[in-house]
Length: 129
Image (cartoon, rainbow, N blue to C red; front, side, top):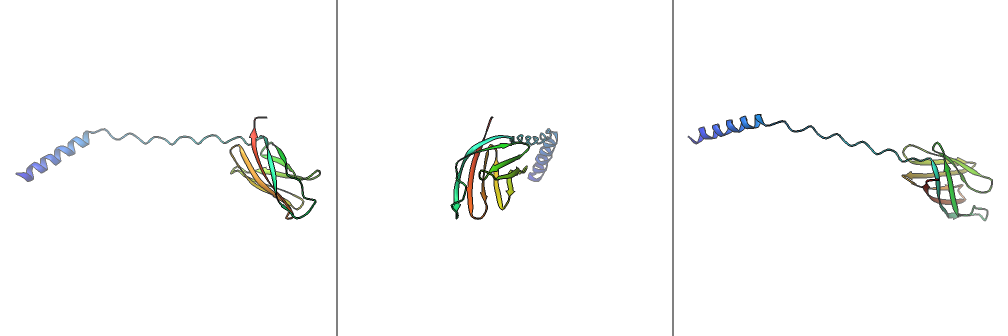
């Protein structure tokens, strides 16, 4: 008798579970946030971390005008380092024997500019004009 009860209970359980509604479909993944705008004015400062010559540029206030993900970094009075921002936030540029490498993350951008003898580190933040 116990085997019959067990089979009967198993059959009733199978019937009840067959009548249950199917589980709801999984929720769609939320859309990724829109990319942060990179064009605009970035303001901040630079610090010098290498100066093997008295002719190295001075650190100070930095203002970058980014348009179409491109900008020019002022190395000294007559030298500008043409630079760009890749979609992944990588920042890079170069001029005569000068390289710029950095990263943009949201409204923040920082990087290093060097010619092997002199080097500056800059940190800037995007401002609404």
